[in-house]
Length: 606
Image (tube, rainbow, N blue to C red; front, side, top):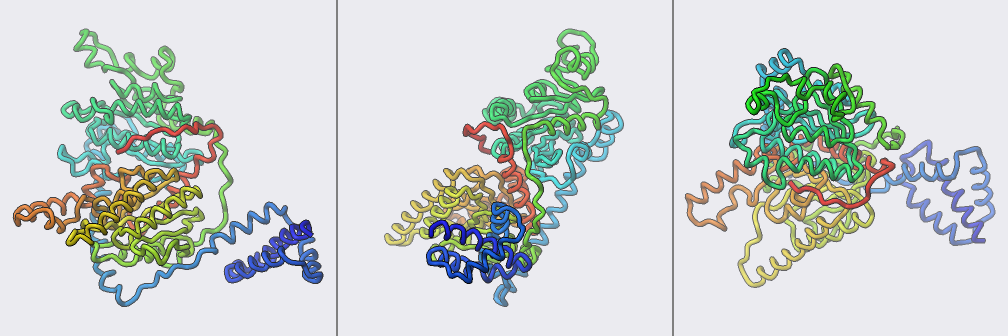
């Protein structure tokens, strides 16, 4: 009898697939019925007529049962979650319009910043770089190296609005793009910006890129064209643990973790920069423009009185034929990037075939997110409206829907990737924090990546009575538990600040200090210990209150934040789903590396 039941269950799955393959929508309405039928039939005697029907239908030629069951899973799971309500109601109209007006202003500022960084160091610097030095512009280099221009650029606005001036894109481009089908981190110096000189923000951006590469086990390619450190700011570049020397430490650690690194010397590698190619697994140098030396010709002449050319001192022929510091000699830049693409093709990865299954788009327009981006905390709408425009089919399986309602938690899919979503729907109360702890631990147990949609409360809880004090104490304890759960969760974490990022609540929602794999801001976001206009509880003097609020207004801006690299870049709301999907694919790639170091390595926190 037990054998008959097993056989019946197997054939029931096959019959279900055959019945609904022509009409996938019917599966959604009937999945529960068939699940119940399967249970009762396999736990009770099988009727003869039904048995004959099943065996007759499943005796037809078909694929293996393993393939069938996997096909059923791919079709069943995305439709198992209920559709979340994303409809607007009349009461939302004035809030939506206020948010939209603010988002359009933020988007205009975003486009102005983008236009500025695309110009690099300016027209004169570009002419000198291309005509006199016979070099290719950094974005053209990426076009030759990468499969396409659909790459994820990290922190493009870093370096703007700093005390020591504007350093467009911090003087280097970092991001993740595909090379021969493999997602790779790239770190490319832009020599049109201050001659490739490294500023403190340049070092910080390069270190962050290495941390992202380590967290996600990404092969890394360095396009080196650097003029060395900016000496007037050497105290902020050289001596500390998170300064320039950390670049070489990270290179060594990445090699130990079996994360491949390739360097292309397409400019000057002077002083400390000389270690970047020599510590990489393989290095390519471009004849005529690539040089590696600890001290350049001017320093040699000052120290010894000897005149020597850059090519004789540390050029491509010397290092490829004599010193052996590089492995590949390229006569031109396009040849160097072809060498690099071939090197990447030798890495020990076994990538799966591209899944041609059609992705279920959200039921609601992603452009609506412009009007859902909060202008301030008083202009926030139910975060379910945001979730319904990010997930496949606008489907969402909510967890603890009736408990801790200021926090939304649940499961969904984004372009086929299952994720757990943690989103603020109000202040992080005692109950909401307990709920968040439970859900984060659940996702960690099931190895499900977490996505945090952060819009934390703008002010701390006030204490007006002993009862309120006890309540706040319990809340702090619960928030501490959620912070511990988030910090210790070993699954990938992606944070998008869609509104406010204020105070201790932001840590529980996986802020920068809690090492998310990626953290992005919407242009309307605010990042500060306290939101503007909420300093009254801490300062009594009217003049001081005004000064602090003005400071908070300026320093909490998303553009102020991204200029200092407190995030991985600004993200237009309507692009959120696309970027989240790309990040999830990047994170998943490490599963396809055939040889990898499984030892946990502490990452640099920036």
